[in-house]
Length: 194
Image (cartoon, rainbow, N blue to C red; front, side, top):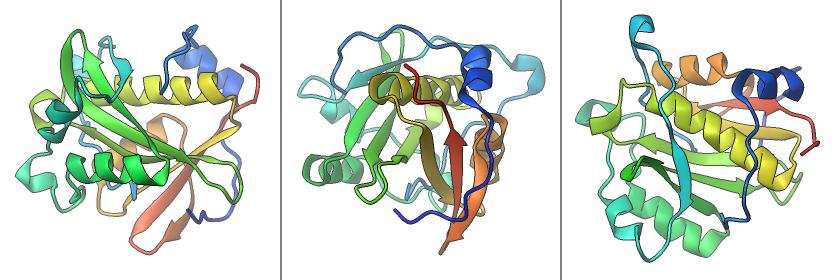
């Protein structure tokens, strides 16, 4: 989980004022290679998205999530891989729902070297893309990690050729802080206040 040079990111008050900070219950809880979120500005709205633990009730459905064939070059690792790795590497997998419908998954972890929180994977199934759900899910994931752990920064990476992910993350305040091989590393700075 190496990261690049530190740069100034938007402060957390600005971020939380923009996206809100809901109260959380005590729910337990990329190589991010991409997200596939891109919608027409005229269609932008904020759909309701909820994060739930991946457990014995939904893990199999999560393995069926996939990106489109065209996106496999920027998100080549299937969901089942992330679930298996999470079980053995201390990662936290979460299912992304809209209503009762499973639409994607996210995986995050803590870097043992510096205590930063990394979004390791984030994916919205191809059937639910271009509806604002990827953006809403990422906003919810940032709030979840911040509220649950009180962290001061969240880091992620995406393939350089994944322009959709690049635009989404930049629009949410993730700033490029370096490059690690084939990935662009981005960081969002937040306050530690819960």
